Length: 237
Length: 108
Image (cartoon, rainbow over all chains, first blue to last red; front, side, top):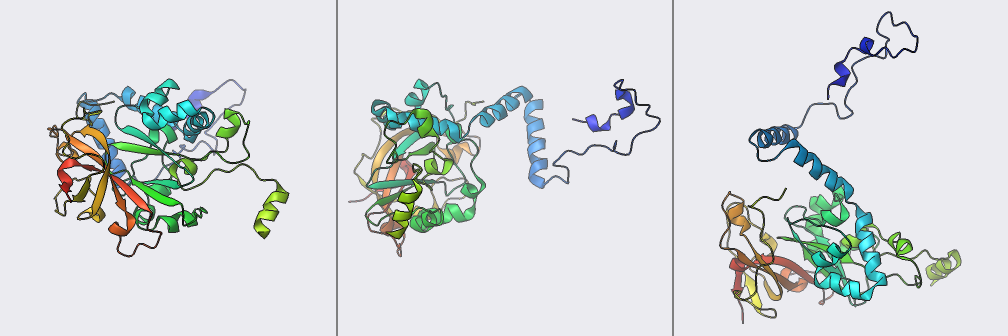
């Protein structure tokens, strides 16, 4: 962690430059997050050091967990949804027992929380929030976006979901029920969006590309690219 | 890195006080400390939509206690109009939250 403290003169790499004195650029290299630590960063470091010192967990376990989280991203959720779109039997299993269905795809969601898949239909549109903190289906979608954790999203989504969705560009007809899921306890939710029209015969890989993180939170609706002429017509309508 | 104190899973059915379809009210009591029952739902009426299993009580686990006996956890469905007096959307809009059994009161 402290390479920047090394004397550059020790690293004469044989390029033939005669370093009579340290070149002007050989200033101590700063970490890119250099700056005073916040109180929470100090606290995190202190607690982490104590947990390691007391043998509760090892530095290796912490690094492995960080790696695991880094390996999870919306692409994983997209793969699952695309499979559900092309395989109705898998979709039924996913909605019935998400953990088991994910295991079929080799996806381990760990044991810290249970998962539920909520399916959008022509009658119901689902949206996920956690008013208490920021519970999120990390094992399928990775780290949540900052807005998901904001007080505004958390408080407004339960009280005015249609208003929030409209700000995300999702306008739902009055006849479609909006169903908000407040992740208050031990379950994490993922939205299974409806397969977009005009995607008949598409491969799983092509379908997965239509899925965004937001579409699996419920703040977006996936759509197949529309031909320019068709989109003009829609706008005129 | 799952620790023995983390949430239990897949509790067996059979001991639950409520069943899907039961009308319930969320207790309107206040508690000091960690609690997973949101304030905006306290005192509100809803319907049990599903039994989610049994889980250790987070109100105790937060203070290094085992959280036993484990509590049944229910998915409770509310009509938005029952939660917010001035809800602006259609009457069909709903909200669901996961609520532990000791927060539910039977409602006829």
